[in-house]
Image 1 (cartoon, rainbow, N blue to C red):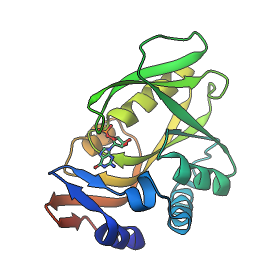
Image 2: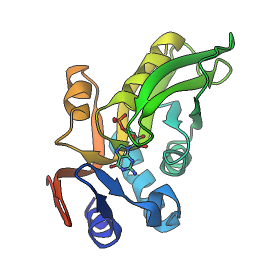
Image 3: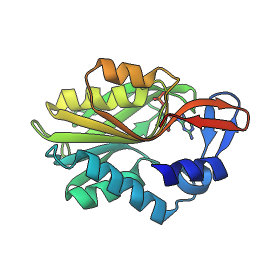
Length: 190
Ligand code: 5GP
């Protein structure tokens, strides 16, 4: 998505080698028009996949997921992140290493909102090593739901996540794919 690449170049800040800060339009302040275009783009890509549920992770996946759900006319569930390792009988859950918080997190989804045979589109803001996406896939598996695809706003393609998801045979659609980040330079895969 060309517009997103332009906004990343003009507003994104590269922290260290591997973290892209996009607080001004996605992770803290939200630009509704841009988020709307993201959701419409995801919906267009996955429109023939019979999606009847969207699963994302709080909090930054929620905005693009809601627009996608609006266009595809389906409900959106967000996995909650819990620090505690306590389990609840009425939830599906999976632990994953948080890339930005550098600690283990448990993602939980109530059994009330994810069901057997639902055709689920996963959405997240970033793809780095694929741990959050893998945990969402595990949660769908526990529910007996089918993963129809994954929509990612910003993929750092030089990290391990893309290969991990490709190897799982999942349709991954990323709106911006970063091939290289170095200081102030950000390069994209076309
Ligand atoms: P993964 O689980 O794929 O290793 O990392 C993805 C998760 O970590 C995303 O949900 C996102 O919250 C966070 N993340 C990974 N890389 C970045 C980054 O460069 N910038 C920001 N803001 N978040 C990131």
